[in-house]
Amino acid sequence: MSRNPRQRELITLAVVAAALAALPLFVKDVYLQNVLILTLMYAALSQSWNILGGYCGQISLGHALYFGIGAYVSTILFTKFGIVPWFGMVVSGGLAALMALILGYPCFRLRGHYFTIATIVIAETAYLLFLNWDWVGAALGIQITMRGDNWLNFQFARNKLPYFYFVLVFACVTWLVTWIIEGSKWGYWWRAIKDNPEAAESLGVDVFNSKMAAAAVSAFFTAVGGSFYAQFVSYIDPESVMSFQFSLLMALPAVLGGIGTLWGPALGAAILIPLTEFTRSYFGGSGKGTDLIIYGVLIMIIALARPEGLVSLFSRRASKQAAP
Amino acid sequence: MSQKVMLEAQHVSRRFAGVLANDDVSIRVERGEIVGLIGPNGAGKSTLFNLIAGALPLSSGTIMFDGEDVTSLPATKRCARGIARTFQVVRSFESMSVLDNVVVGALVRTTSTRDAHRKAREILEFAGLEHRVDAQASSLTPSEKRRLEVARALATDPKLLLLDEVMTGLTPTEAQKGVALVRKIRETGITIIMVEHVMEVVMPLVDRAIVLNLGRVLFEGKPADAVRDSNVIGAYLGERHRAPSS
Image 1 (cartoon, rainbow over the protein chains, first blue to last red):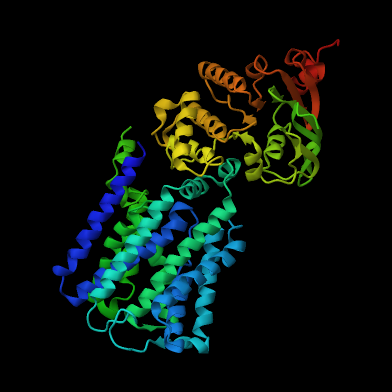
Image 2: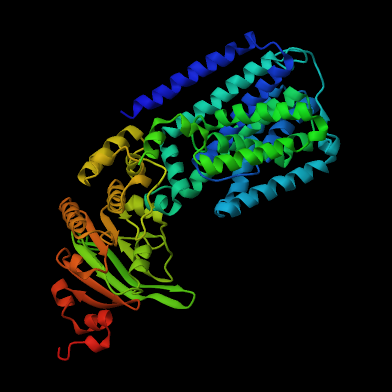
């Protein structure tokens, strides 16, 4: 009985992915393709954030750190040592996961808001360190050398479609990982921890190690996203890959769409990212901050009208629950 | 160590910033017994429960469970050994369904979610919640939430079940059903310690009563004797009501 809804989710993913894969046939405009790529990237990143923040309930506002690790590690390996970004992507994911475990060791002793504050402080500290670290280009950043368009170097200067397909697969993978977790022992444990850690502990749930595992998985995929982004924009500096804005942009789609749900991050990203991009290009530099005003308004509306997130509009269970 | 003894707390003390919540408490619970832990507010009942379940560390003393010293084990490990509990203030996993709440408990014995689901359904039926399986925990009535906590604890296959004021806030009819459930649980061979401060609920149910007052064991024995004991009456009702003779 409990199998069917889960299988239905898988079919939904297949349909959505197929529809998205066909999208470039109709969308030829490079700017719009760009927006699509960013939207899918944030859907994947927000899903990665959701694993720790949504399912395990550990709200991080410092995921820009893992994103930055992803961007810097693969870029340095590529520009300084000539190692292909694919390898750098996996290495950076591993390093970010390791970093998450090292940071989680002290931080997961903190609860609620205190944990969140710690994540902000750590990410900001790392940002300042990178800003002053000459070997990684300090504030000037690193320009990724162009070695010609091909899949091995994961470089495509003219045609953006390969990036689109990569990021589509990436979004599907993060979704699938979340789906698998949701149906496993870890998924139950993490949700129990989110709802009530004391009760979880009394039922044999290893709270600390569960949080560590969730953080490692979440950090891994966030860093993969960072490596992708570096290849996509081919120039990185601390401001463009490690600033607080990225931490927000990973958390917000999940919050907007539905925290701790399979489709929340994707739905949130599909609304938030195009909106951000369009207002940014409409207002230009003089409108800097307009997107932040929009986030603020959207979050207020959601918090007041639909605290469960937009995804609850589609869920039958939620609508049944709403009726007294 | 005799295997007849399920739990033995030896000279257990717990201090909270100068207040001795449990002062040299020693109790012994035998396999298959239902023991009532009673006492007025602030007697240290819940503290003792938390010490047995591992939710709080002891200041001193030892806790033996099923022949082994579990004093230094955290709550998680004690659950794996076979100690399960409910909470005085219910702690359901509110965002999860009733079934999933119980699945979390069942997962301590298996890694297969399919097996855990099967077991959770059986237990929900046993606990009389089969009609609420798919409801969200937050939508349950207070008495259903109490039942859910008991079901969740049972799903961990405990040898010892600690029930912390499960009858509190129930209507007389609901309390009667609760009593029937506790009896049913005992018939499956699980040892039970229940904290309750409503005497008339526990007295007919338990084999033995332990009365705590001001962090110390005041009385230990048959429930019928407890209500006649002048020290117990004094603790509950104040010195004025102490029976003149005895």
